[in-house]
Length: 121
Length: 110
Image (spheres, helix red, strand yellow):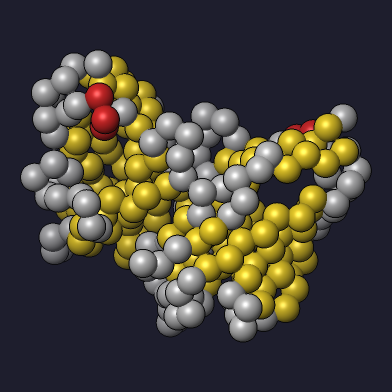
């Protein structure tokens, strides 16, 4: 498995402001993902953070609203821009560790960070 | 649209009983299947994964996969109150992001 930390663990923000969430992994990983979990809901993928290239966003999520950086194989940030109360969610990063050395597409056990609980007033 | 369906529950079982959690998926290209446990206010914790048809056992947990029926299940034997949580089924066609079901809330009654 991988040890994942996220900062901040929680925040309360004002409408119209932006928050940057950091995700740090204790080992190099090829794939990092950002998910959102709205209150009482399951997880929805926001984007895949690719090292050395732009993030790949899912339908309904755009780069201007959720810019992502991935400067190296152990770190990524997600910014929630121009926030509204509808952005109040738990934001989770997950990783698909590459250090297990497994080939092909069958083995991708993903592990989640502790999450960032965001409340927008 | 690729979907993963779960009964939201709550599924209530007495302590010591077997809890059976079910999941169906629509994408026939799905190759990897996961069960996560999520306690209230916590992030999901991976408890089981399965890639091949049949059963996979790990302690009190057994995952069952039937690709022809597009069905995956999780059995929890000797259920304990500490097993009370939401169980999320997730699938993926490969080394890509997961598609999650809405989760089944399990309540184990002492």
